[in-house]
Image 1 (cartoon, rainbow, N blue to C red):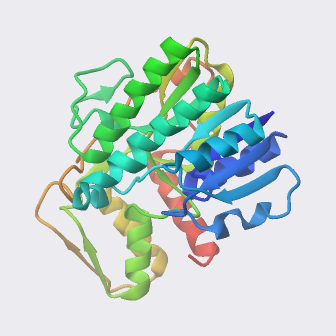
Image 2 (image 1 turned 180 degrees about the vertical axis):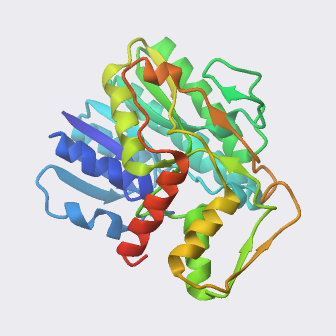
Length: 314
């Protein structure tokens, strides 16, 4: 089986590359290296079933040439801008990298007859939502350009699935942590303390609470949804157990540094930036019905991620 994996040099994409190679698939990996780095794929260099190319998905001529050359059986589409705050500074960023890039991939699939598609989505499509969010909950009212672009992409995936016979799986990720992470609270705190071990500045009051999931467990959930879903369009939520506050994340990272007098400075707002959702939690019953069994508590995932980041020299 030959698959195209977009966003392959990124945090989650590179881990998915590793897993798909372990499963015996042939991987054609592409990335524009906006967030990704070739260092994330160094372990696959020279592997006979792995090929990487630096391609901008929005260059449709180059993208179509890859599809025509390689005759893919399926596409895993992880390429995106996932920095919500950056999307507020440039309102075209999410439009281009999340929505239009997805449409470009879907159109290349249609033109070349590729029928299986995986899409990485997000809780941000809901905006601020009370209670544990199920896949059929609504209304969907995103509060960030990131969430809006992912929601628009989901809508186009639905149309391509129902109109052109593409079988699509959408998995809405929680906050994912682990080695190779490129942004987010864990990443930002580690690098801030590396620059100044005595002071850590936190965006928001620290009471923002999210479900964190270790990257290997997320890839497990992804593969389960991919292999066991049925129907033309399947949507799932993935998460571990429980949630973790930003204050807990800060304490874990500070403790790992071992500085007894580090000063943690919190902001006054209930969120870190415009579009940040202060709290959300997922209902994962649909994924569990496929056989998914969450393993790590959210806080355990954060601790494991911090340990792995430190052991790899961050």
